Image (cartoon, rainbow, N blue to C red):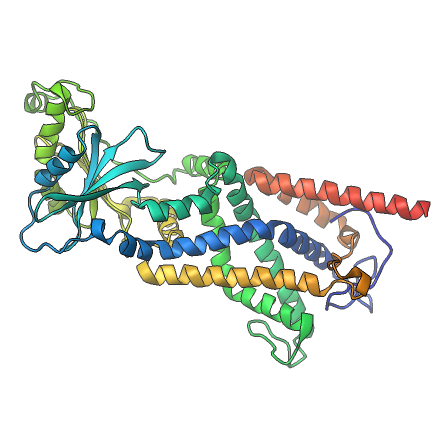
Length: 490
């Protein structure tokens, strides 16, 4: 990566040697390969620790939905049988349990044996967290309460793993680690794929050449390289997907992605919940005014009226086709409609939503997934797939296998680095040398200019990638220059 040039030396990797101009013996120009190899090497060595944390925590997160069902079985399931009580009665039972909190929403039991989840806003909780009271739908008896996080309704175990994966429980500063990992993951993967394919093309006349399988007849570093490359080919598509979807949640690149989606009208549509001040609406809500949330006085009357309308609102939503597992957002004043939205759950490909005037049963607005922009649909599917929700258990197993494969590739990469170390007894703790400097000298000027423009654009859009790459080039160049001065003095 450095513009400085060291005297040629025999590299210790398995690829054929190159001269200072970047050509193989015989004069064949290879230009880009030493540059990409050096980028892949340094990025892999320096970014891999961040990737290991992200991979391990991500693998645990893939197991979390199944673990939740076991750990929180008493809250999520009931053995009661019979006719379910009205949802309004279930909400009132939960409100009696937590009269100190403001009602937010309800997720009615989706199937026999499931509990209803009544959600409350709690100012003592963190961002996107709500207190959930679980109610037996048959007896309308509360069976427990837990903190629920995000639109997926993650419970404490899954939330803890999610926040470890996202920011190491360090809050906003910790998000730098995950964004740095996601920013570099696609670069490392594509660079490695390019090097592996180039190596295969050089060796394909040899019957032992392998692209997607391991040559078990080899040993030592050659076999490690085979494992590293072949497994990398198998997982590269999944790795690129994780990198792309991970960046949508990131702090800096995520903001740029959000602005791009906004500019291209790719944002996820939402339903309007504003009610007109018509005579009908005013008459239907007369006597309640514009109340603030609460359970006392006029505000409490408004909430009580809204709770009494929940079952009729659910019937309207079911009639127009919003029928899957839903969350009903309960309004606290007469100027806002109910929102009934299908929740993130396994095999949910089209989360529709509708807003309904609870007093009149009038449908205020509907958002059909089929009408969303394609980019918004793909984003929704991508997020659900990344979270292990889109295809349920199949999705979670695939993510776990992908995490294991990526971890194996990283470990094999470090193993190759160790296997390239000097073998002298006095250098036992030494590690392998990096690929040769001076890779730019074998690249045409026009290519260098194009690369600089592309890297600058990508670095602006993905800031942590650009900043870390610039820092690496500066440090690497400074080290190379210092080594050059030291050799001249000696």
